[in-house]
Image 1 (cartoon, rainbow, N blue to C red):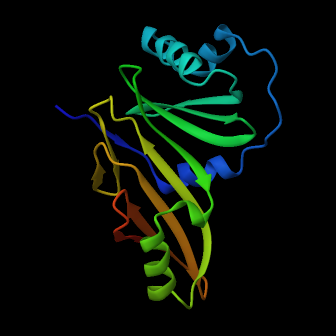
Image 2 (spheres, helix red, strand yellow; image 1 turned 180 degrees about the horizontal axis):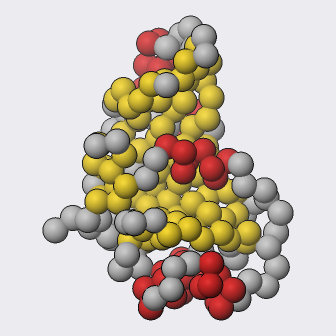
Length: 173
């Protein structure tokens, strides 16, 4: 049975605000105390250390449904989401608009020609974990997605681009 992991677009924005300053010699005990107590939090941290060797500036947060590690890897901020069984669900990172499929770039430029293209967030789903990621009621099970932030007249539109390059209205603010 799939476990739904819930998180908001604010989580995506948070990774862009992280400083890229290197974190020195983090220890398992120091990070574990920042996380919720329990054997699964230590296991999530251990799995993270194996998954993201060389990560710096790691900050952990526990929500009702997952463990979230915001970090810097190779000079780029990322966020990793682990389910409560300490298995990697997905990662997010900022990417350039040119990273999305070409047909989606053309369609966005056509449909949103009066909009300014802002941040683009890439959600990389862990295909080896059956947990699905759910954002505002949309489930993204075993599928990578890009979220393109577009603005016009103090209004923000978020367009989801699926792994096939199709556009989906995601959110308006």
